[in-house]
Length: 228
Length: 372
Image (cartoon, rainbow over all chains, first blue to last red; front, side):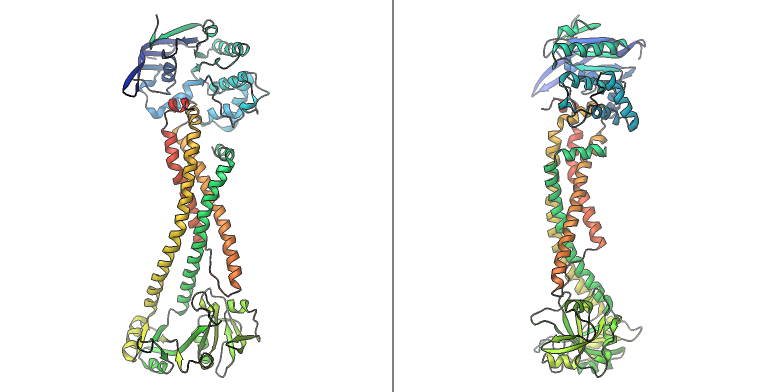
């Protein structure tokens, strides 16, 4: 990555995003500069409307920035063409959502396996990898259960397994403990901690101070800016 | 991807079934209407091919309504370039029945010429009529099966019994619905005096039919002619109009089926907005989403096509069996019709799914994920 040293996996420079709400411009991000090292477990906190989810969607290439740059794993993704985003998302990002966002018709195995289909991975390899990550998540005996047959904690673990399937550079988790009880929250957080200890970069957007207090570092956003 | 497409379709069984039924009805209409059109086309083509070398000579229209007597045949025969000419009398076999591509008919012809008149059709059993025959008849296959006739059996025509002396081979033309009897007997039977329906003139080898037709018209008083190419042009025009009417009605039905696919797919895409957002977040390409949605529509098209084809075949088979008792074959499913109907069903499904698919691929993943 340009001049950032090889342990920086994510860097944003003067990142801005302005939405139009009717005719009124809403400045969701007003110049965000952050750096994240490989293997770090970071939390992004801030009040509602501070731009946390917007920042996450720009890093995850779900949306495009109005201004500024995002570098992921040495690639300036903000300079990439839109048609390259699907490939970059597959290779660089794994998403974990607050509401799990599992496909209800698929089993746990199917939900993890589908993430690798788009990378054109051979079916046998997909199944093997899906079983591997689900087993790592402690769901080896729940492979053929559909989301409706799983608890909230189990669904979120399937969601984490899906995010890990393509071995991404960064895991982006948007309120991953927002829908689970305190015991499950601890289980989920411990999974992120173990992943981070194993070298996986994890960025968690959260309102939950119990989670943010336990991350390596916390970035606080206020009105679209990083609070120093 | 195919398994995902099938899973999506099977998840909404009733909606999928109704859509497939909608397309199926359209294709059913294409098959039934098309089969009718195909039957007329084929009957005409075969009939034309069997009589393509003959010039038809009619009485010129006028006070006597275009009637012509058999004595004119001798005059026609004298025209240079005419190899032979003979009168034919055509009448419906059953009282009140029609003649033409579907109705059974009696054809009165000079018995010694029957082999020439019916040429190149051969008899599959028995013989042609010959000089001296009176109440003898040679029948086509449809009449033979309709009246369950074998050689030696009697066929009643206008209260007179005729002995079947020959059965023609199957031709797929109007000859199959023909009972050939001696001309003088037919004229007596239908009280026609010396009248005939038309005179067939056979050109000598190497003589142009169109030119000879003109020559006959000029040389013989009070006659009008129809050369093979004029007959073909007239008949094809009539068939084309018939085809346009039947196929248009069928296409309309099929397009309504296509709209139902589009409606289903639009609803389905809207309902799955969030799912598409998730898939995009997981790295799905535009082509993956496109393939998934268009694939669903195409499969509904294929299923609808197969359903319509099967229902159409059953209907055509049933109607033909029922009409066979009346000596009529009205429908013919040809390989060409099957291919056209299936291709149309697939095209209809695919095109109807394209717009919803493009809507799905055009969604921003962020907006799609926020969709509730």
